[in-house]
Every structure is written in C-alpha cells, then in structure tokens.
Image 1 (tube, rainbow, N blue to C red):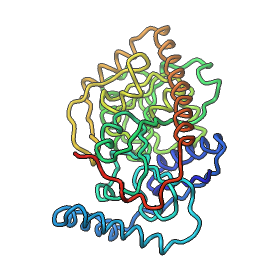
Image 2 (cartoon, rainbow, N blue to C red):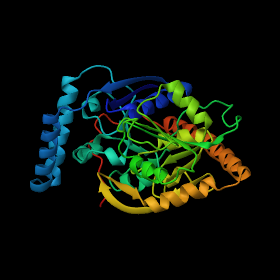
Image 3 (spheres, rainbow, N blue to C red):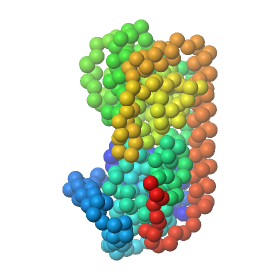
Image 4 (spheres, helix red, strand yellow):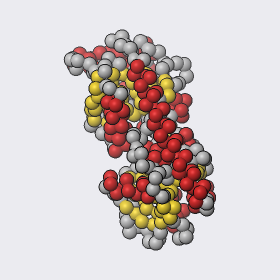
Length: 358
C-alpha cells in the first residue's frame, strides 16, 4: 500500500511523530513517504476562519456542505494525477492534500486543532486518536472515530539495565511554553537539598538561576539528551497540554520516575504504579482541548514524595515504566496493523458522510 503522511512544519514534535509513523509503516511492509507543508500564510488562515464563521452563522447545512464539496472538487481538478492509497493527516486536516489520496485518516492533536477545519471532516474517512481522552472529543465530531494509541518508537533493549541516578532530575521543555517550566523552577529554588535538576528550555537564560542544584541548558544535542535520559532518575514534567505526550513516553522508555499533571491525557500515560501525579489548580479551554495548571504546592509534595521513596521502590517503578512502554508499543503496532488490514478502497467522494448530532 502507498501511504502518504502529511503535516505542517510547526516544530520538532510533529516531525518526530511522522518519522515514527513512517518507520512503523515500512516495518509493516508498506511504501511510505512524508510531505512537510509550510505553515499556512496568515491571510489564508484569516480567510478560512472568516468563511467558516459566516457559513456557520448564515447558511443552512446543505449550502455549507456544497461550498466545501466544491472547494475540494476544485482541488482535485487543479491537482490531477495518481493518488496515494492512503493519506494520513497529522494534527489537523491538511486541506490541500485532500486531492491526492483515495482514503484519508486523521490522527489529531486536540490542543492544536483548528476549528475552521471541522467542515473538512466530511472528507476524512476515519479519525484515529492517540489517547482515550481524544476519542471522547472527536467522537462527537466524526462518525468513525477510534482509539489507536501511539508510541515513541523502538527503544534500546538495554534500557533499564543501567543503574539510574536518583540524585539527578530532568525537565525537558525545549521550545515549548506549555510544560510547566516556571512551576518546576519555582519549586526547586525553594529546596537546595533536592537532587540536581537539569532544566532544558530555550526560553530561559542559563544565568537566570543561581541555585547550586539547578542547571539550565537552552539546547542539547540528540546524543547529550539521550545520555541524560539514560542517567536521570527523575523526570519532572507537569505538562499543561499534550496531544499524546512524547516527552512522557520518552521518560518512561528510559525508566525515569515521572512526575506529571493529574489530568488527561497525561495521567493516561503515567499512572501511580510507575510515576507520581500532581493535582490541578485551575484549567482553561484550549482549542478543542484543555490547558491545565498544577498547583505548585501539589507539585512540591509529589516531588518530595518521589524523592523520599526507598531505592527498591524506585527501581520497581522504573521497571514498571519500561514494561508499560514496551507493552504500549506492541499494542500500537497491533492496532495499526489491524486498521491497515481492514482498509478497503473508499468511494471517490467522501463528502456524503454526516456528522453525529452534538
């Protein structure tokens, strides 16, 4: 089967998702390629939002469907040629690619989903969700929404064979401002007796903190980050929003004791047998998802509880984290293979699909 993965050039996360998915698809025996699309120009985004709002407010459903059906039909006229058997859209519907596939799947990230793309769900055959939390959101928006799960990819079979250093904690935010970085920093500054914290963030200056047990690194090479994941005993990751949680998965793949937010989808990946959860203080609607803010007091308690555990208990949690990762990876492969095996050629026009009542 010829599979095309399409996504926007909006950051390392989507690129990594695409690379993981391509490797898995090739491993399952399918031809696969990627298209990384440039960000949508601002004028086009504004036009799309304006059209969506006007049609939603003033036009009956049948007229709205006709408008979007005509737009996609025009794309197919302007982009003739061979179609891929399957196009997988990552995060959002990539409208320009609706003309190049016979069958279309969407693997969304609810926290970055663009509302004005909702009418194009009529041209998507199936929505496959990374988390059960996402299923609960998108099942109200598309008649064929199923749980797929996701993975961080294959891991080294030696993961967990080396002793973890429980005097070292790691917080990886990179370029994201939604990882609870400031809360982590504030908590750590109050505890000079805590383990050393290496905080990776492009939004903090290395000299912005003078605490002897905190080291701020704006960037790391891939090899440096791999080495830190392998060494660190704790990963402090109180995410505010996640589509899946690749950093959480990477932490558990390396057997780190993970401390994260007690809210979906973070607490789908990290449960109390393999990590610690910090209570939410407040939350905000964030596109189709929710942005959660942990209480600093709750985060402080969770970190302290983790640090106070006996070594045997920490080693057991580390082992369970790696076991969960390996099991989750195999289950993802199985579910994806099942979806591909059940794929049949769709009719050429998928626009007749109806959205379920909301």
